[in-house]
Image (cartoon, rainbow, N blue to C red; front, side, top):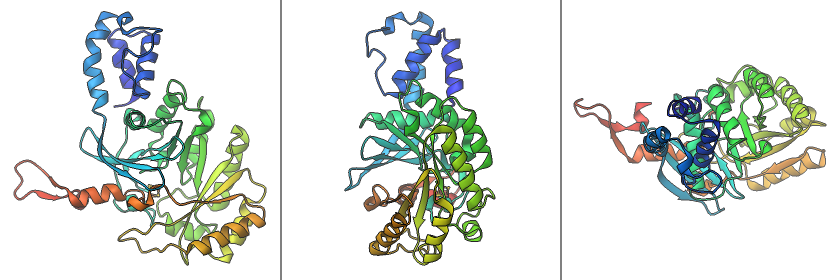
Length: 353
Ligand code: SF4
């Protein structure tokens, strides 16, 4: 379901603008209909009162917790079941953050990412994105939402921007605490500038070499690292939010002195911060994680050369933390029926992709 369809249904049921706002606010905050005192539910028109139970049941069914995987760092990975049985991952991050998924699978096919190995299965609807936030809010406060889970937000732009608009208004998330994370797509740069709610931007850089970037991110739009940083810099200056440049550190691939020189050349004087995340080992993905000492050395060198660099472990990595790993593990563990009546029709969901 998409948010504009939900709004249309509410209006058809007799909701006025204030009723609609209240219902969307309560839903996105996971609050019951009778919470607060300013506009008690008894003020809703009777036609809306009649329609609401069915609509609320549908909203509640958009996202349900499949499994919970607490991490030692205070994060909590949720495998979330959508209404059609597909699953996505949401991660409750330390300090009131939430990482949401924008697609089931992903078409970009990054070589170091579990999600990218299976291709795109379907888009996540804007209402399903809000449902991930509402679900998280039943467990913890959420004050920051990052679109860094499964999927490439730029490949599902309408749904993601509709969700961002709601989260940045009735959802009560500060605009700079909404983080649109992308491999870089000219359509996304253009669109974000035009929106009323402008999120902060995270750009997956990973290397300063155009050829290597094409190998690592095979189906990312054709932008060189220079073009990516130029577009990021324009957005940063226009919004006043620094760009978060993302870099998965892969041993022997993008952790050399040549890349350090490239980063200094590309990012010196730019309004941004470089987040370096040592790669998490994934079965079936043939990259290695550099030693922590090497990662610290890279970060220290960059700092000394004037590049604001943060070295971080991805949240919850002690619980199969790589993006898409929970889904893959659940698929491997739970046989599913393919088609009613098909002979011997069971297989792992992973084998369907
Ligand atoms: S890292 Fe992100 S963009 Fe790349 S395949 Fe994985 S989900 Fe898609």
